[in-house]
Amino acid sequence: MGALQRRKGANGDREIVNIFKAKGIPAKRISMMETGGIDKGDVLIAEVWKAECKVGMQVPDFVYKARKAGEELLLMKRDRKQWLICMDLELFLDKFI
Image 1 (cartoon, rainbow, N blue to C red):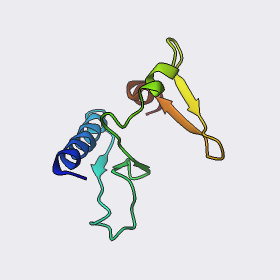
Image 2 (cartoon, helix red, strand yellow):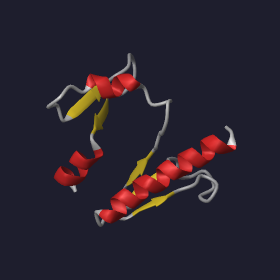
Image 3 (cartoon, helix red, strand yellow):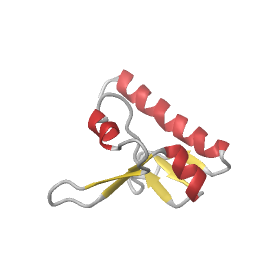
C-alpha cells in the first residue's frame, strides 16, 4: 500500500472519529501496531465497537445503488458468508445513540 492510500485511509479514520466525538460519543483510532495485533479494526467506538473504515473507489458503487429511496437499511449476504447491515451514518447516530 502506498503512502497516498495510507494517508487517505488515516484521514477517513479521523473523519469518522470526529463525527462520533461531535455527537458526544467517545471514539478513537486504533492501531494493530500499538496493541501488538490484539485489536483489529481502524476505529474503536464507545469502547465497545471495533469498526473497519473503507474510503475511496474500493467501496462498491452498487452498495449505494442497492439502497432504494425511503429504505433505511441495506441487508447483504454473500454466499456462505455472514449477513451484513449497511445504513446511513446520520440515521444511526440519530436513532440508535
